[in-house]
Image (cartoon, rainbow, N blue to C red; front, side):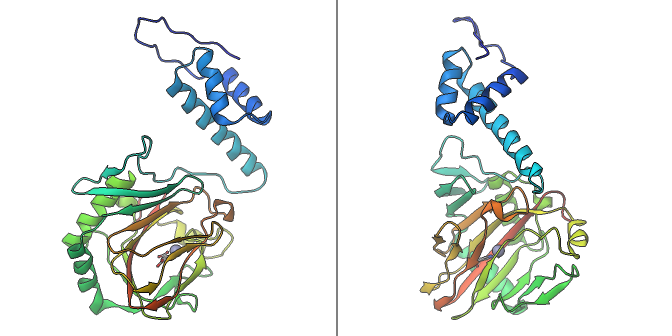
Length: 294
Ligand code: PD2
Ligand code: ZN
């Protein structure tokens, strides 16, 4: 493999990743070697571990994306990502210490705790309550909105920065997910009563639908979702990911984040809101776009 060494006592010089190294990484992966083994052998050849890991990740991501595009899938785009590099238990979200309760890498799903206090949940519900109406979903045929039988909740949208509580939450989320406030849609609040549910769906806009170009003109695709639980139903109402057989409990103040780097089922981000069985479920959803949402 391509060799690199740095003098034992000098500060390590930057080690540029060469095409030769990238080709070697791809060949190793194609030969069936696992990522840790590839990194190990790079380190033994004198590459700094951090450089080796980054070279591996970048090379394989680019390679897989080229293969996906060659198969006719839409290209991958950058997505929001909380900084979980060192497996922290807590993340500094500016004005609040958010708990990292669970993380899945593929697809990227993170369950956060303590994102909102009980008082903040109550304030968002109280301000939203008088404005609730039967939920509409974006009509991808036209780019407008429509009543949808798959969603039996009531809802409303806050415009971005509309109230002090909304602004504070938006800034906290931007810091947590490392994605600018102005790339977010307005916060949507939903209420599910017993029997209400949100059937499994993808949050990205289906590229082949005729209304999609109009929708995308406002900030590109959705690339991530944060569902924040504002109240706890006594039974039911979890957020389900059918492809993963995963159900996230709707615990007040917690949130589930997931991202999708291309608008395609291969992301395995199919998800739904299970029927509420007892009590009421209130959520606030933040959808994040590729670019400034205006
Ligand atoms: O309420 C939920 O758990 C849920 C499920 C699926 C919310 C959304 N999607 C959403 O707001 O997109
Ligand atoms: Zn959804």
